[in-house]
Length: 89
Image 1 (tube, helix red, strand yellow):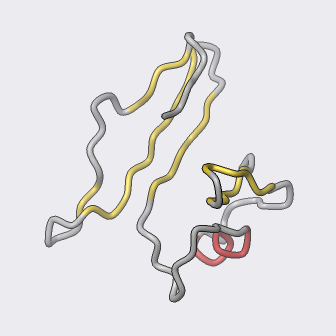
Image 2 (image 1 turned 45 degrees about the vertical axis):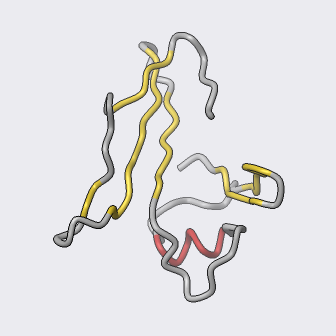
């Protein structure tokens, strides 16, 4: 569950995941935005790392998306024992 401020809306509404040629889900980008232009983007993708883990690191993101500025990235706990990364990019 994700709680967002009342003045934000999620796009695309009724989102469905992108799929490859076999119909398997490949990921989904969700954008939360308000009328003033403040936004948060959440990227949901399959874990393609050789060794799957519940922790996502800055290095993991840098390998898959080297175009992001990760200089201010910080780890965040998504759930007990599950670590993600937050950054502005």
